[in-house]
Length: 521
Ligand SMILES: [Mn+2]
View 1 (cartoon, rainbow, N blue to C red):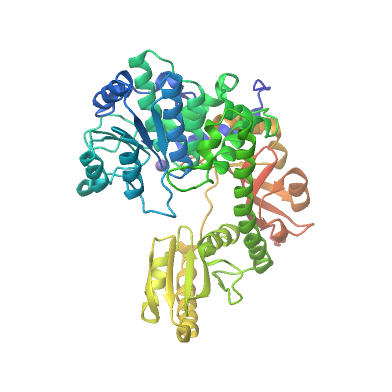
View 2: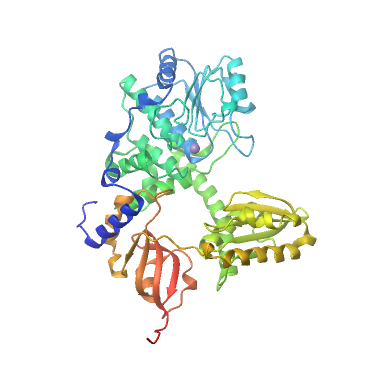
């Protein structure tokens, strides 16, 4: 499926993108043979020996995961590896963030005591659970932590052993693995010690968890995902096969990448009580119940997506025909749920490319979420108006505040004044960074196949941004599904389009510059 004819235009665009991003041919072609020795991970011998001892002495052990796709896949690949070794005394516990705060909490401590577990392995979690680990150790349970989250030295638990590339004394050269990436490396090391192969499907689930966790798609994270592309026909387990039967045909690397993303969206749902999780039960289920669990997860996913889509459709209606700088919306009808205000602001900011704030009444006050991109500072904007606000805070590109109703008009005036002064300045004029220029005819499906060498796209390696020269709106719409903003294009117009090229048939329009009328010389 992947042996198409070379496409010179595609190759030219590929070289331009790779050069702009500093990707060398060697980076693009790296394979698992180039993975660093797992022995470089600090404490890996200590931890592996402890796990081996548990296996040999038939000790009950429990994997403590995390309720996001990174944590679910972390739990699953370790659990499956132990299964494949013939071990039967292991279990898992997925904490539920809606019920308890992050980390090792009372629910898990009770579970360990009741189950008589003497070894707990925390994956994608636990790195700041100082007290939780103390409590487990009082119960006679050793804790191993396999994590990738940043180290907070004063919270670092006194665990039996910690594997985390972020540890200051860790020699492992790549620090940006997902939690499941670290678990994969531990599993590979155990596989070597036990002379038991790690199933290829572990790479698939590692790719899924890594994509979902939005780790930078460079270095080893690329290698892991690309390994799945290249070994696609060897990647099987009952869950991959099940999901494939419910997916479109796989004909290309792009299809595999889309399949991984779809799997990650599915397992993002399924939080339950007492350490149970629908996605884990689905992944581990071999019998007929697998189909029921899948339906259950699909239903949960659909409900979440439909709520989101309702909001997005509404946002489309309030942004249609918008022109200008600085989008401001007051949702006095309460159409946008409180928990989605930030998501809504992000959606509009992406669509219009301008600083966006959305305000709404909440608990007798007005709350606001603001989003912007480079060239504007949301926190500064709110600080400018701080005398009118109850409180404000956040990051440069994502911030929020609350406000008394009677200050609403004054705030608008103040914020508008700030917008005007900032956006008048040159630095605020955002220039989109273009990876390559091309004619529409160059952007064929065959050219896209060449660009698949850049897959997987993600943080630090986004979809190529192409400036399409001299194109008509009608031709652009004939060639591509335009993911956003299609309604802002006017039939009959001619000009330059800047797009993010997202798939063989799909672009996201970043900007359309109408051709200026001819000036007389
Ligand atoms: Mn994670």
